[in-house]
Length: 412
Image 1 (cartoon, one colour):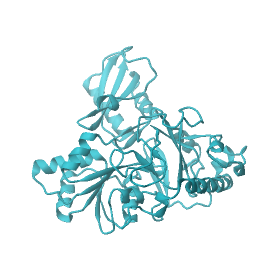
Image 2 (cartoon, rainbow, N blue to C red; image 1 turned 135 degrees about the vertical axis):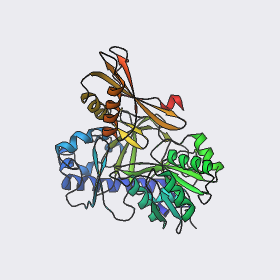
Image 3 (cartoon, rainbow, N blue to C red; image 1 turned 90 degrees about the horizontal axis):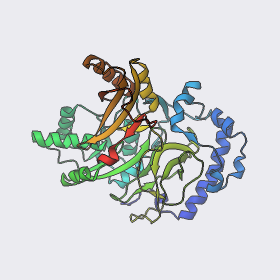
Image 4 (cartoon, rainbow, N blue to C red; image 1 turned 30 degrees about the vertical axis):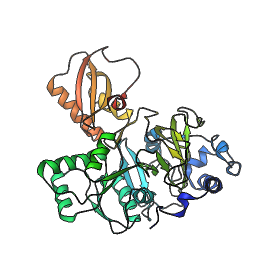
């Protein structure tokens, strides 16, 4: 049985680069002809002259954080999707941002992440990412099925029912967020439920803290991570725990200095910028807002593609909380819904390896309990996440321009 999902994973690096650059020229020509957005964006560029990464760095960047306004101006996908491409589903991510899907086999490229995590034909997988509006459940579902697995579309929540499924069906694998797997294991231990059938897990959407990975290991579950987004699908994936992430095939990854077009020096932290060779949704120099850096050493697993260190922060204030993106525009929407609030700041921390968010509000008078409850309800309605609300007098919050502050790195 092969250690690789396909033969491309350990191909010669020079051959891979030649292939990617050859396909890039075709992608640019196609996008300029078939996509209304790229027809305008690339109007002054000749696709035949983009032959290498240095040339690619001359092209403009499209930012994930700009998609909200872009899609409002030209719904549903801002004209990025190609006129001849086939879109069969539309999802809504927080923002809102609308994401397309073509339901062909492994359209999100997630199969190789499942394969690297040990999933094989005949395995049963309990998929605990949401299938409701957001594409996460479908992304994982397609990857598991690409490996020949049978999928239980469980979604998140309903812990008791999830434990019933684990005891009744005895799946070998779990996929979803690490925090929900921890919840399942903790509840199973508390209730003396049998979840020993689980031996492997592919997690995504949140940081996997070392202590949590160790808990999974002690429970007999080998766990690896996948780095994916609702726009791009799989970007990179672990093949060995704590050895960085291997970049997926069929994409070009650059690490770019935030706010610029230029890639940083190898090893320097910068923003992950991806060009996806997907003719249905041809994202070209798409800035994810995530920070990472390139690892120069070859992967011990034998895969030859670029490796990145993994998530090292955010290049902008858009922040992933419990697997969901929260945008500064959403925080402002909450503030505007409550005229008594002059300034707000959303802080995200980690408590017992779970994301916790608190909305700090400045107002001329301290908010009373009913007012706080109303703000909490608005926060939940806008972000789809629960959060605490704290009240401060005018001038008490820092004057640093931050709308969202991520404290998780300092608190983990």
